Structures are given as C-alpha cells and as structure tokens.
Length: 288
Image 1: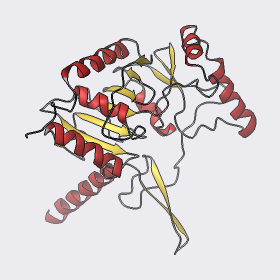
Image 2 (image 1 turned 90 degrees about the horizontal axis):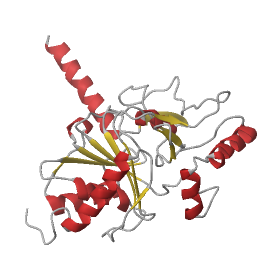
Image 3 (image 1 turned 45 degrees about the vertical axis):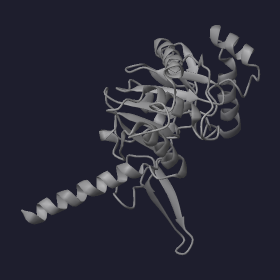
Image 4 (image 1 turned 30 degrees about the horizontal axis):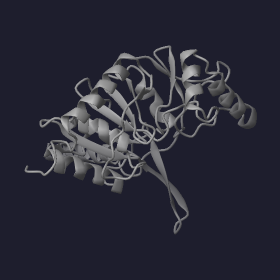
C-alpha cells in the first residue's frame, strides 16, 4: 500500500522513544512511565495513548483487532482500525484468536489470550490516587513510599456507605506485590484476566502522557479487605439471548415495548463465534 506517511504514521525516532518507555514499563510492572505523547489525527480522549503504543509496535505481518466496550464496529473502533490500516496495510480481524495485536477500550476479550498476542488498553486516568491527591509530584512520592492509604480509605468509605466496595469500573489492583495500578475502566469482571495473563498487557494514556504494563505471568490482585472480599458483577441465572452464554460479561437490554429485560454478550465477536460454532455443530448433527 502506498502512503504519504511513514509506516504506521510515526517517524522511527518517535517509535523508538515510545518503545524505550514500554521496555521500562515491562521491566517495572505497574509503574507509570512518562513519555512524550505525540499529537494524533484523532482527538485526545479517543484512545491516543493506546493508539501510539499500537503504531509503535505493529509490524507488517500483524493482524489487528480493535474493540470499544466490547464492540468491533463502534465509531471509535472503526476510526482507529481505518487509521492503522491506511498507514500500515496490515490485516484487520474481528476474531480474537486470529489477532496478534488487540487494542481495546473498556474491555478485555472473553477468549483467553495467548503468549503470541499483545493487548493494548486505552487509559483516560492512569493515576489510581488521583481522586485523593491532585498533585502529580505528591502521588509520585506516595508510590515511591508504597503509601496507598488513600486508595484503601476510598474503599473503606464505600463499605461504610454501601456495605460493600462499590467501584463500578477501574477498580484498583496491586501488581507484583509492589504498585497499586489503575487497570483502565474495565469492569470488575475483567480484573481477574490481568492475573497471570499469558499475553503482555500494555496501557497507554495519551492525555496524561503515561505508559505502564503488566508482563505475562504477573501476579495482579484487586484491592479488597479480608472481611469485605472483592466481588465482580453478578450474572447468576442470566444468559445471552443470542448464544446462551452464561459465564461472560453481559449487557442488560430493556425492551420498552414488551417491558422485558434480556441480556446479551458484551463481547460481540465472541457472541458471533459462539453462534457460528453452534450452527456448525447443528449442521454436522443433521448431516449425520
């Protein structure tokens, strides 16, 4: 593919600078590494941090998958895929198992990732202590001293008010028994997928100019009290109305006409794959 830009948009110097930051992030799991965030042809807040990581790492033989809150066809996902494809010519795919590089906003795919895959998560707020300390200089000191009393205090206040921890998403995690980290606004349901992951998981915050990482096979646990253990969103007794899955993150869909509440897989490509597998199995049975 002919293009007016460098391969993957960036010049080699920019890619090297971002890769150096990534190497440091991988070497120190959960640590926020500052980097020189570049201007991008998309607005800040639309995933510029994750996109810069993707453009710095992608190669000609990669297959790219981009999802936004579980969907491969949202405006954000389609725009990012188009930009990467136009500046690289790489293949794009909706199937998680086929992708070598996955960029995501707000979700980790339902299918377990492998050691041959990279997951890049878009991050709006990388600092888990930002709600309790506005100063960047002070949060750096708190991290260096392993002083995470502010994060624990936030959870304690939730328990006092609601009788449980009530973090909707981006529930802080403890990485490699050292750093408290913001996992990006993934649902609590996805936090467990960070623990001992086969794949390298990279986090990019373009507006905040931070990169951090969870290397493969790293211990990651969600912050919780012993007497108030960490819990995820519950879908007990519920299943996807399309494919029947009951062990995945589900979207609640209310039909105003019928007044019925139904559920559907949030990960649309996973749902389609399950439906295709069921159709294929049904065809084999009928043929037999």
